[in-house]
Image (cartoon, rainbow, N blue to C red; front, side, top):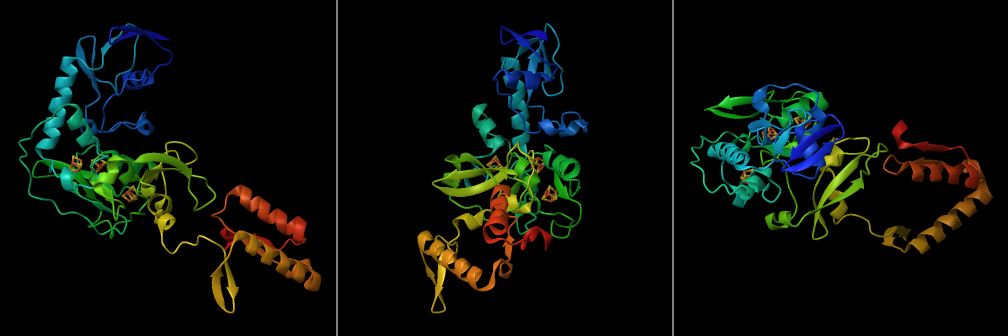
Length: 351
Ligand code: SF4
Ligand code: SF4
Ligand code: SF4
């Protein structure tokens, strides 16, 4: 147990933790581009620290992510000195950042944009840059190194969580930026999981074909759901506006703990697709025609009863799907084993 003073208030912190964790535990938001709980006990080169989580501890400016809480600390989370340091970090970042917010698909969900508004960053010398080439070779996402702020999160996620090591940080004309191990993404061993895209705080890594208008991005709400592609049960955060899904990312919970595969991350567009079936279809005179669920169930019952009477239970076989939940699969095998009376039941995962 640690007794500290946070912004003039005596506070008890119950467990050893970083100052950043202690502050967020007390409901104090600490800005950061590079912080990720999943890397807490790993050591990375200091140049990937963004430094924005700076706070004042006993009169000195310290990074709150890497300073461990100790008894008697006097912490100021937003003193004048702290604000000045954060402003100078943001000003340095936007010196070589293309200020394209008005046409950038990250606008509305961009940490750099949000912090610049919050800290009142008004202009930049924008000494920019010969434009670095955008890598659009992946069917799923693009890499724009010009917008990279070298926070290193994508490199860590790809290397240490995805174990793929596709991305690294390099420098061109004095600007540090992300690059691909291999000529382009398409030529690399990238598995398109998109976990790098999910952690990028700016528009350097962006999914392709984002739905909705840019204005919609300010209206999104997050809806947590379970991925429907397999039985693992990964938790997904859907970004929803005007009843349309604009994007998907991993929730920091469930069996996936902040990661997804390519299907969960990018394969959500079927939900609003015009080809999607909205009613059961019954074949009549060779044509599939729309029917109600009552009509469909009546037909299924009639066919099953007829075949049972003429050919017995062994005439049936059931094949179920990894896209159903465990509970639905359980009920399906129960229907076949106990209602129809056959063990001819299988699952597409064994194909
Ligand atoms: S990445 Fe963010 S700050 Fe940069 S242009 Fe896009 S919205 Fe603006
Ligand atoms: S999509 Fe996945 S494998 Fe490809 S670069 Fe990003 S994190 Fe690495
Ligand atoms: S691409 Fe995004 S996540 Fe990767 S280093 Fe650049 S800003 Fe950070």
